[in-house]
Structure formats: structure tokens, C-alpha cells
Length: 120
Figure 1 (cartoon, helix red, strand yellow):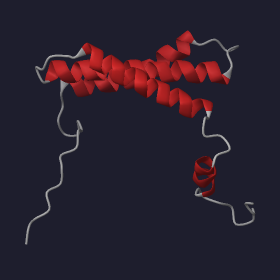
Figure 2 (cartoon, helix red, strand yellow; figure 1 turned 90 degrees about the vertical axis):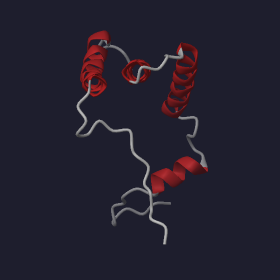
Figure 3 (cartoon, one colour; figure 1 turned 30 degrees about the vertical axis):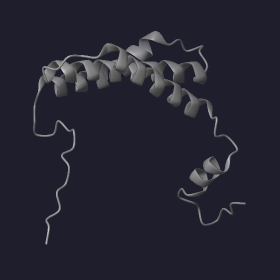
């Protein structure tokens, strides 16, 4: 009988590295930077866009760090292309292009329900 081979996951657990440390630092500092950039008078929509943009910046920097750590060449245009596409998808999801569709209703209705509430 063949044995099952599980793929290795890209994780930094038990593997301290510069890329892992910098990823952790970015994860902590970018929301703080977002807080400094945003004004309290901004709408929730504007604040959400700032957070999505900073998540895109984080993805770009982590891709660059991964290339540097593995001593590979960094393909700037492919990374930018992927980050822009991911940003557009995130904004589309944030804006709610699925609002009122069967997909959105299925996601909403599949969550935890209060037994006293009837969903129609």
C-alpha cells in the first residue's frame, strides 16, 4: 500500500528566519500605520480601502522578502500584477458585488443561527 505524502506548508513555525520576523513586524506595524493615516471623520468605506491597500503593500513586501531569502530574482512586474489583481478582488468583495445574490445568501444562511430566530 502506498503511503500518503502530505505537502509541506509555507509556514515559519519552528523555523526562525529574517523573513518570518519581518512578516510579523509588518503584520503589527501596518495596522498601526493605517491608524496614523486615517482620520476619524473618514467613512468606514474609506477606512476599509486603506486597510485593503496596506494588506496589498504587505503582500508585495513579503513577496520581495521571500525572493531575497531564497536568493532568487524578484520579478517585479509579476508580483505587481498579482497584487493589483488581488486588490481588485478584495475591493470587489468589500464593496459587495455579491450583495443580494444566491451566493451571498448561502454564505449568510450557513452561519450559526439562533434557534429562536426564523430565517426566511
